[in-house]
Length: 495
Ligand SMILES: *Cc1c(COP(=O)(O)O)cnc(C)c1O
Image (cartoon, rainbow, N blue to C red; front, side, top):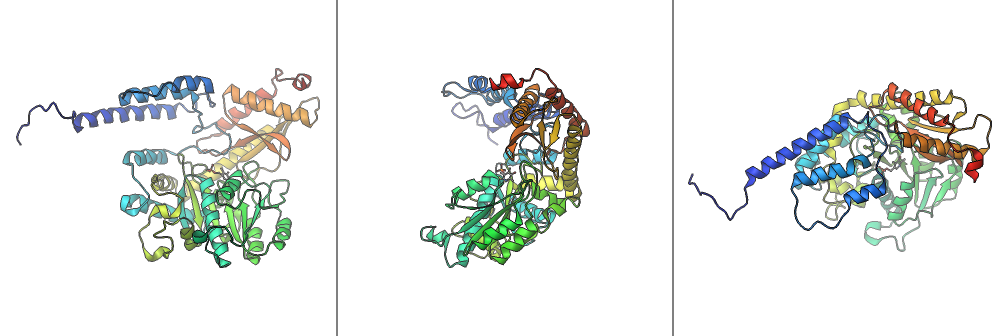
């Protein structure tokens, strides 16, 4: 090889660049490993407030380049105490899962590989990973093997995707091609939802031009479950294209609509049944809890989250549709949208979600399912439910603490009362004050909600790293906050 000698007109060359990158990635890996190892010990809530974070992350638009290392150092320094330890063992807010070791590592690889997972041609491995992980998922959840699976950002987009397929199918049956002709002049669609549906159903209906309020609402029972007798009455008033959106797993109570009955009644009306099973449908993976979703396989579509109960990093969910043709009509790329799905064995991931260029979400899911196996997924679900029951038992045994409703899954609703007796307003104020005090104290993080018109603390156990000891420490922190005499007395609160 001829020696070109120094060339002052060129870059330093890839060797130096690679070396810098390797150092930086190694440093980030060590930092992240330390962060993860410290999750159980750090305060669970964020310490920095909005103003502090703005001061640190803000500033004028950078005019000149910075070294990658300086950027990463600055990001860590600015963001770290504005983070929430939601990947740790004592985060019980909303419905948020942690991330398993293999899925986190696979997520890093996904970033490092930086694939455009939209088309087979862009990344064959991304396509096959989604295909395989989707097949495993259907088997885990007991859903029809012929269903199609789109890997979405979460259940919100899964609901939108599934309801787009529903819209397509019920209108096609009425002789209307909504993909080609839109909704203007289309036969009206009856959309039936439960009174206690998740707000993302409303978002999906908005996106799809079906209207969030132009729906029939089915009354819910005291656990938030759709009442089958009311559904029957509502369906009697619906003729023509009809879509029923049921729910498996209420974000407050964890309760399940009677999906078996919902499917049976809806079938009789030739309606499409969609199940929003974001976290609750994972009950199907547990022999112990599967009865909660009995009959769910008879629905037409299912929205599922992976970032909640499968414990993969954000963002990850699934839109599953029993009839792949309806799914393809709704979100398939225009060139492929009207083909039979099995004309080609090659999967283009973008056909199954409202996206083109996209992240290779299949790798984390593949890794999580491979890491846990069927028994590990069942164990994850059962363990979270067991912890929820432990919360309910320990808190419910304490004076002045009321558990609202039945604990059927991983969700617990708690309400606090003054020992000397109180009215609803007192208990609402006390409950909110206890939630705020617990959040500020930092042992754990959990949120408040309103359940059947009454304030409640909501505990969701969705992470696989929680132990009995974490539950007990959290119970102690909650009871200490509830028993703290410095919480506002009724007279002060009313000002
Ligand atoms: C969380 C949740 C959603 C929304 O899911 P995202 O992943 O946040 O988009 C929808 N439905 C139910 C029942 C949920 O619990």
